[in-house]
Image 1 (tube, helix red, strand yellow):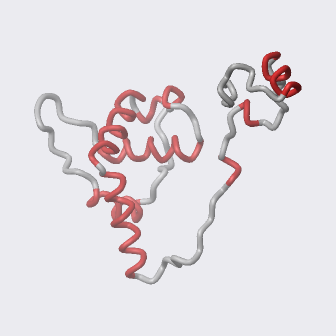
Image 2 (cartoon, helix red, strand yellow):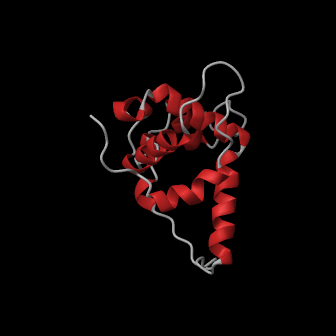
Length: 141
């Protein structure tokens, strides 16, 4: 089943494409076109799905993940963000005084849920006698 809608409009792709590495292969088989790879990455970011749940019309998830991580190691995403921010700033579209953090996607570890920890038997005895319980004043984790 082919996708009828794209994740990025043609205008958005026109701004993004020149910032990506060249499309030529170093050796071996020619690489997959950048656009479906970037579209897949945007889809994953938008949906929050894991790599393995990538729809088949984007191609193998391993290909998308490989390109994403390779570009991350080479700093491609940092350069793309910096260039897009500089372009938007030059057009006066950025307000650098406004910051927004969406806390709905910040996850806490299950042990950070606020439950009281039961002290170990040795700690109870040390607290009641004022001693250190043989730990040198440090709590055991």
